[in-house]
Image (cartoon, rainbow over all chains, first blue to last red; front, side, top):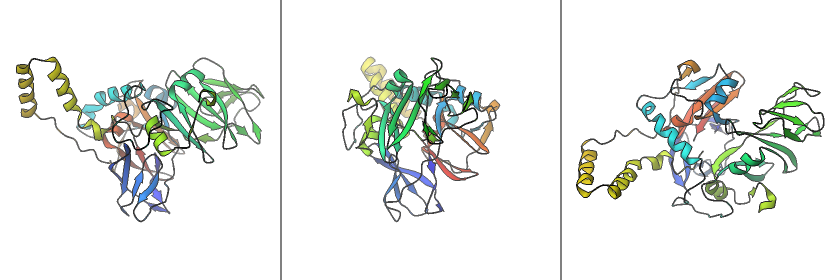
Length: 238
Length: 107
């Protein structure tokens, strides 16, 4: 998910192929090609330019609908609607973490299984992969990346992961889960209550919001291919 | 979400895998019959292409969604929209206009 613009100009994208089993988009305006995992133009007049990630959430319909009852939903086109159940089955299968590395991967990194689902995060140029399995264990992760305190929050019920800068008005906050489903958190400094979306709901900091960070869900083979300097959570295990 | 080798670019080849599985488990005669049937009734191919002018429906009309289905959601200012993964995966890119500019939703 990215802003469809570069250098102040709106761009329209099509999928033009794969490099390293990662999609490559072409923009109709300049014909430049863009690698999905890095959002960098790899050829054409805009070569070297980067597209900007746009804030988004990967979640379940149940969770999204209860948080946003007035949400609009993308309408499927005729014909494509018939394939939704089969697509959902394949998407569920893709979460298993099992399976061989697909043919065509251009750089191999065996620190994790190739099809492990990870959430990639870039903070001030520091890159880290948070494996879905590690998130299911830890659920709330207080870390420092690129000199910035951060918190990653995993709600197992809806399989939803969010991340924020864990700093408010210069004060670093450390979070822990207030229930097993991690729909609520508390911070150690003020014992205020927070939801999993960075909003303080009660206590001394009520009304405060943490700055969100954008997670990039990918297979490990793709994240590691295009982010070779990535570290992996938890650091001690590797 | 990107780089799935279940991505539609590969998914197009799905029926071939089913055929291979059948071949292993069926007698040659039944296998031949299935092959002929597949040739006589080819699966309609839907193009894997971007959606340029997406249309939206209210949540109450999205009866094709179940609670556990995956989606990409955006909630920025006035715009609250859900892009079901099962639709995104068939198009690769959805180009949309938000109050704060154009976006590309990808899978």
